[in-house]
Image (cartoon, rainbow, N blue to C red; front, side, top):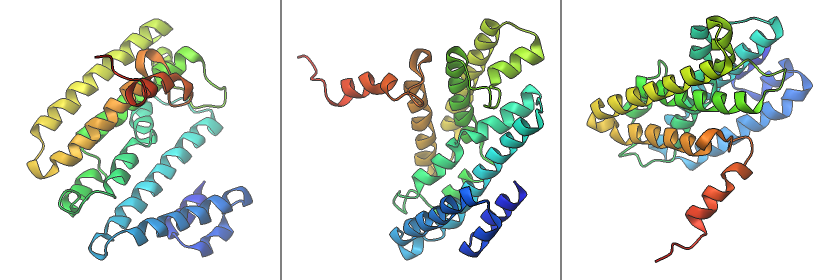
Length: 237
């Protein structure tokens, strides 16, 4: 894990020699993709790449930490689990990456600073909404034995509760995160409002993807009817 992390920090093709063979192509392609992103930006927008690279590096660190927990058979506390698994959803990175294509009057350097680590309360709340919805759904469907335990399972273990009680508790935490997100959105500086709206919109998308406990992220067919109704089915008049 340390060699992989070091290679990402170097962000150079020469670092590929430190990686296992199965990761070499991914690493080279990642660097190539980011270079393509940079080429699409105007000269005055290229500063955004440093934020994008840092977000990607952090995302990799979160994944490696989860992998380390699994390999070590480490059972984190519920608080530890929530802090890491919220970030490992990739939603903080997705929020920032989505800003890459925004007009410079909206996606200013101030906005990228706001989105970056330490993430603001709005971004953290949006990430936890995605995490809690995913974990409730995956708990109901059953998980792969090699997967990191979910927040539901961690809560059960720590609190000695039943599965139903744990799901209800996580659902209540999800509602609380919506209150946090709405509150921070109402209070955010006007210059940051479009970025905050982006965070809210992505959190809303998570609610649709996991509507009524379905996992439309893993199983696209679960979300197919919703997409079809929105874009294809005629609206009766």
